[in-house]
Image (cartoon, rainbow, N blue to C red):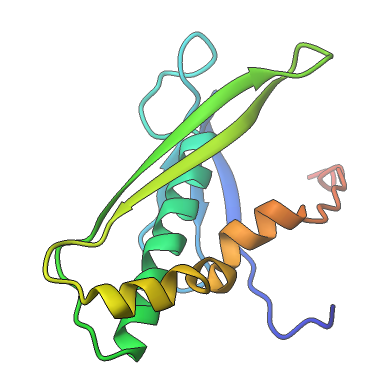
Length: 146
């Protein structure tokens, strides 16, 4: 696949397992991420919850976009995202399954909804990337001595 864009964000340790995410646009508020106890203080969502939120939001937005293209106005859409945590063969905690239930609201034209059901998921950047597996390159570079 050919790159068509990129962005960079920064993750900075605040204390222990509490981190601050600084986004690439100043108008975006920082995001705090923490681990549940006993590792962290459970003062903010952990990365698994952030990923679940990204999947749920992306699918919801994709459905709204599809319906909008069919001249259907959607208001009051809500989604529920259920995440199943599992342990792999090495006993490492992993996200085993994500279930998303979307409630598009009342008064949605059934014909337009049916037309979108076969396509909207394919336009969700996050969900489809997770499904296909995302290449993640990792480097650990020591900070220069002060």
